[in-house]
Image (cartoon, rainbow, N blue to C red):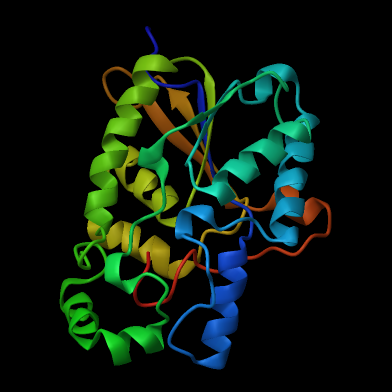
Length: 254
């Protein structure tokens, strides 16, 4: 059977970022805004996030070459790029493999809600808080931002690109929490209710692994079958702190 998908597709959320740390501090203090001066695209990894990315690379370095990724795709956001680079430098793949950046893998855009905590949205943008309550996060699109559906639309074309250019390869994607969930929605043909239930059960951990393998029995031409989801073994193996803070604020960001 001719393969139309990667042999293995591994999806990784970036390591803990300075934004995750700042968000936690803002929520604990119950203030309206997250204390960050950088654009979301420029937020770097925290020191712990760098360590998590290296741990992921070391975990893969113990595998045979055939079991390590030979294609690296990354969101162009700094925290995802850093995670990919540190993974590679720690031996997670051959050091001459290029990191391919794809803006379609970027974080969900939050528009006028960017940088606000849940408290901030209720006090500064109460109309948007009400719209989101009525529509739900799957369909609510804040002015200047995206809904989950918008993210899904751009990710469908990413999957087409992966199928076209990287069939029978081991592709590893470095991206963001909402993107991990939306890719699951696409690949597994989920409903809104199903993916939001998974989202409610647990945040995607920093540097956690979600992995699919090609299965000839999936559909008429074969497809991708989920092997593991939200696995934190690489971080846990080194007795490192597992972090699960959302990329963004509760109640506004995915």
